[in-house]
Length: 263
Length: 235
Ligand code: HEM
Ligand code: SF4
Ligand code: FES
Image: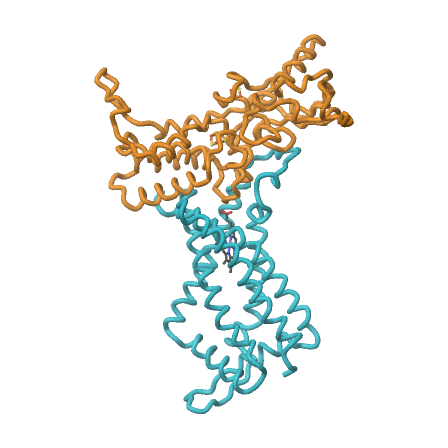
């Protein structure tokens, strides 16, 4: 019989080093907490729920963290866990991170996304509205919604373009790319939308304007430049590829050189 | 906005100047490989005639000004990008961060590598460029050649065979080429990406070409001073 390793245990005791910060202007610090009896089948967020129940029972303030769908589609859960965006596994969000990825007795650092463009609101919650503003600057198409809108399926799109567009469109706006990038660059996020719409017929009308406006907003929000380290692509829960950034670079150069309208 | 200030435009310039410097490296290496010829009058004349051509040809002059401009732009742009990137990261750093899990060391340290290459360029120019322009350097007459030509060949061989500092200089050159190798191991392919030149049919080729270039070119460059010091006869 195989010797039961620590990792194979069904329940874990953990030490958490969690970032606590009362409000945006307050000085933050790490707080150490211990949690016991954490099921390896539970998610990271459920582990934090257990911690918060303990804190509430003890009459202390629970840790503020973002969560919503808890199934990897909304993009709101964040967290820099033990030095990685969304923790040690690839291709998942924090709500999809299982506690079986940790060993009994582990010490886990839990930090908010760090970026000048993502100020901390409270504890582990950061303000990601900068990403919304980048989208608002051009990440849309103008369509007639007065009742005679053309059925999207009636517009032919070749398979390769449709696939590329779909891959890019799967971005959930979580900001892991920004959080993990040594430059806090939002290139992958911005490129995902630029590339998504540049691949589709519906995106052609605003194509040149879109990329210029979105890049300008991205810069204005204080995100960094791209060093092509590829960290974003590795940490992106949706596997958005670096080639979409190349696509945006191409779109932008083309737009700047050939656009007839002043931006 | 346009082709100057935006984040993307800055990367275009970084990539374009970097790629131009890569072309420069090829030319510079091809010329320098002549230093591997066996010691003697033939090697000396050949290299010095080549050097004279390089300082007098108008085409080479234009190329050399382009190279100086590229280096300057590359350095200035690199400094601006690095400052912006550090500022974007914010004041509070991660207490625990594992960048090695998602990116290569070179890709994260281009500025450090670049600064070391910059230091090498300064010392390299002092070693040779300054002597060509301000001396001390001997001149001599070659048959069928109107003007006296400078003996850069002897300067070069003597520099690396110097009893006092030669060995240190050879090691410094070899070390700098190692640094260049790391800079190129990331920079070559990154430049294509920054310019938006990516296509599933060619991405693999660019990566392999970049990896090969980053090994072969610095290795050959480093081989020259090592060869002069340890293999070539004493001048
Ligand atoms: C023979 C000399 C050099 C060559 C061939 C070269 C080549 C390159 C290439 C091809 C890139 C990639 C561009 C891109 O990311 O799009 C690059 C990036 C870079 N180089 Fe150089 N380089 C040289 C010297 C230098 C020097 C002297 C510095 C000094 C500051 C420097 C600093 C940088 C920096 C900071 C980056 C990264 C920019 C970023 O992360 O966005 N390089 N280099
Ligand atoms: S590109 Fe990936 S990591 Fe970045 S916001 Fe979108 S889903 Fe998140
Ligand atoms: S909570 Fe919605 S993706 Fe994690």
